[in-house]
Length: 640
Ligand SMILES: [Zn+2]
Image (cartoon, rainbow, N blue to C red; front, side):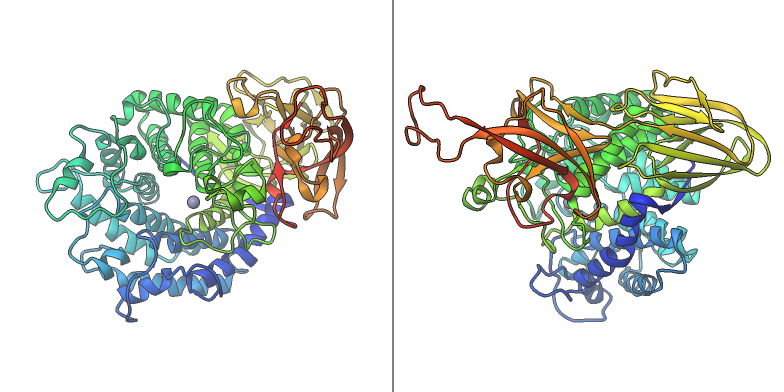
C-alpha cells in the first residue's frame, strides 16, 4: 500500500499541528525528562540513560515506559516531514534520544530498558505481561517515522537490528519461541517496516504473530507454567488479549480495547498486503461488532474501566465510560485501513467521528493537559465521592504515571496528512476535509491538489487541481453520513452528481491546471438518537453539527444538567463565537428543567406535587472543548 501524504497548511488541523510542534512536544519532552514539577515522574529518558550505562540508579515507571519516548519520537518524525526547517529544537532533542536508544541497544539488537536494567536474563519470559514486543513495535514505528522525517538512518538501523532479533527469536521453526505479545502493536509496526524497506521477513513475522494468536493450547498458559515465571499484572481471561480464539474465527470485539484495535489494525493491514479473504471476513465482523454495537457517539470505545475493556453490546454508560483516548486513536487507525480495503465512505466517517470527538477531547486547548478517560457525562462531586468513578476525571491532568495517551495524541495529530486521502488505481479518494496540499502520482502522472476550507465550522470545501499536464483520473469526494444535501460545482458550473452507494461522489474527467471543484456539505445542528437498546441513551438526544458532537457544560448552563429536557420541537440556533474556547460554533436552544427548590415532599414524595418546570436557555459547545474552563458538570445526552 502506497502512503500519500498531504501537507496541512491552514485551518483547524494546522492550528493543532502547530500546537503539537510548538507546545505539546516540547512539554512532553520535559515530562519525559522529569523536568515538570508536581506530576508523576516519567523516568523514560533516565531509564535509557541507565540502560546505556550513562547513569546509575534503578528502573522506574511502568514496564512499558520506553514506549512513551518512542511515540514522542514518532511524532517528531512527522513534524519534520512537514516542517524540516522549523523544528530544530525538537530535532536536537530527538537526536539526543536516538543516541541514548542506540547506546542502550544490546550487542544482539535487543532493546528494552526494563529488562536490561531491572530483570537482566529474564527477557522474553513473560510475553503476556511484559510489553517487550509492544515497546519494540512503538520503537520500530519511531524508526520508520524518523527516517522519513530526517533521512537519517541511525534509528532505522537500530530498529532493523531489533526487528531482525525478533524475527530470529519468534516463529514456528525449531529453536524459536512459539509465542506472541500480550499487547499487540509489533504486528502493525513490522508491516510498516516492511513497507519502508521491502524486506519480506518483516511482513512474514507480522503474519506469524497474527496467525499464532489464539492457538490452543494457549501460549500464555504454557508460559505461565514455566519454572520461574513471574507474573507482573496477573492472569486475565484470554479474551482480554484477544487470544481466546484464532483471529480468523473472531467476530466480537472483546477485551482490552486498545489491544483489540492494534490487532485489528494489523489484521486489516495484512489484508491490504495479501488480500487474505478469511482475514478480511474477520476484520469486517470485528468492525461491525465495534462500531454498530460497542461505540460511543464520540468514537470512544471500551465502555468498562475493569480491564479497560469492551462490555456487552449496547452497554454504553455515559458517566462511567472508560473510552480511553488511545482506544479512539486505535479505532481511527483500524478505520483508516478499512477505508483502504473497501473504498467506502462510512469508514472515513468513523475516522472523522473519532478524530473530532473522542480523540481531540483527550488534549486540552493549550496542549498541556490530557484525559486518559473520556466520559460523556460528569458530575464532579460524584466523581470525588464515589469510588465507582475512580478513573473518571473532570479535569485533564498534566501527566500520568501510565502516560500512554499524551504522546499517542501527539503522534496522531502530527501524522494526519497521511490519512486525508487514499489512492486506488487512478481514483483519488478525499476522506478527511482539511486545508492543505497533496502532491501525488495518480495514474502515472503528477498532480497537486489544494484544499481550502473552514471545516468543521463552515460547509464549503474548494479543490484546486493542478496536474503537470492535462490528465484523466477520478476524484472521489466523501459525503459524510450526516449530510443529506451535498452540492458540487466544477469551474463554477453546478454538477448533478449524487454520491454512490459507497458514499463518495465521483468526478471523472480530464483535469486541467486551474480546474476548481467546490463541494458544499450543508451543516445544520442535528438531533441524534441512539439505538433504543442503548439504555443509557434511551429517550435522550445528542446534538451534533457536521462532524462535531456537542455537550452542555455547567459553566454555561448551571448545575444539575441531568434534569434538563430539550423538547423535540425546540429550534436549534447556530452561532459563531470566535471569543469562546479558541473560536467555536455554539448551538443554543430553549430547554426546561424543574424549578429550583421545588422538591415538594422531601427526598421522596408521593406523586401529586410534581415539580413545576421552568424555561432554561441552553448553550451547547463542541464536546472536544469541554473541561477547559472552571471544573463543573458536563452532559452529552439530554432528555427529550
Ligand atoms: Zn492511553
